[in-house]
Length: 176
Image (cartoon, rainbow, N blue to C red; front, side, top):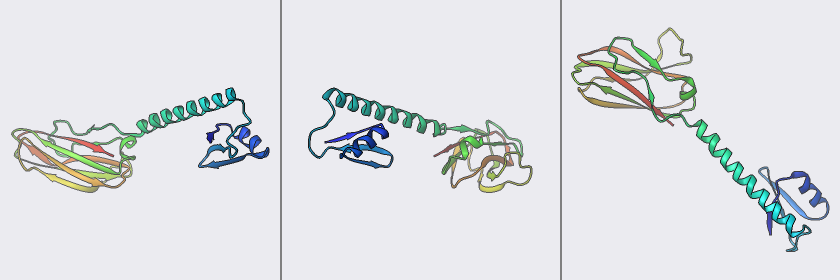
């Protein structure tokens, strides 16, 4: 019979009395080779209940912790902008956890020209030239383009590198 035990001192006590105890990856459990347990049945029931309760609490905490690490599904960057050098960066709290990023560029109706650069830098306040990752040039009005970027970046932004003519551009980022 395999019984998980949440209390390391109780595990040590039982192993000192001749029972076999083991610890694997921080999870303590006891194997009773005789098929019987020196614990009373009410104590065994409590032990199993506590083990299940601790396991459920661990699973719930782990899932909440993982959810807190998942960035929001869509980060808005440029919103209906057209002026040269308009730029918006992703917050570091989002982009620093990303390994794969997709940047969507949406050209509004009436646009006839323009370009958007996707850039990266070590600091959001960096005033020099950011490192270029991709350039999306206008291809058609009322169209959406996508750029896929692999890698870890401290800061990522979209910037209008050629003024948008006849309309506006909006950009969003999604990352995992």
